[in-house]
Amino acid sequence: MIFPARAFSTAVATLLVVPITTVAAAPQAAADAGSATHAAASARRLLAHLKVARPLPLRGYSHRRFLPRWAHHKGTCDAREMVLARQGRGVRRDAHCRPVKGTWHSPYDGRVLRSVKQVDVDHLVPLAYAWRSGAAKWSQARRRAFANDLTRPELVVVSHKVNMAKGGQGPQSWRPPRRSHWCRYASAWIAVKHHHRLSVTRKERTALLNMLRTCRR
Image (tube, rainbow, N blue to C red; front, side, top):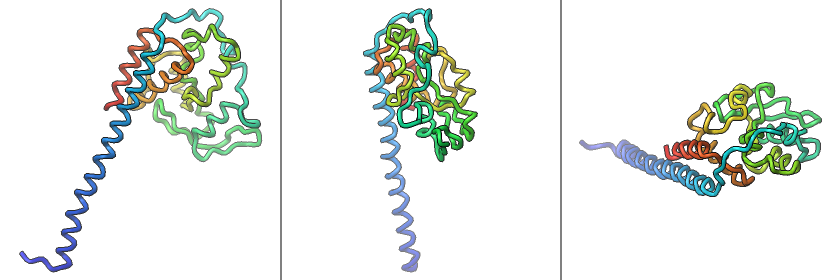
């Protein structure tokens, strides 16, 4: 069959576009998979350096021994207010730095939160859990620095509902409802514990390794 010149050009262009799009998508998918695999490998290396020990008793623990109040980091803004500002979208604050409007995504359960009343700032490694992992032996100043840590992934904006469900539990007894977040959750948990030199229990270590297996999927 003989194609008119214009029709032939269109047909050739169509044939060329499809392979290029397919080829471009393949490296991106491979890059994402490679990044997840690398993150899991890094987390496993850090986990291998954590001391495995039995949990210390909760005796003597008090929330106030970590957080008598949120520490101020910038002007009138405290750590909680700064976390809410940086992890939200379209956040508006009043003269005292308190967020009054914004939108937040809760990574644990995938909820989109459009009211400050719906959000909590979660300590990824709960304060009571940190106490039993070695923080009981820390100074008050070191515990306060841990509770207000803006550098490590210790402070996370989540829904109030999922935060209440988590409570002071570790990964051996509680995991985010969103399975797709397990890789990041386990990696962040390990990073926090590694930096602050906190121990892990055998069951906790096993649970973290199981969660890291989702990084490849």
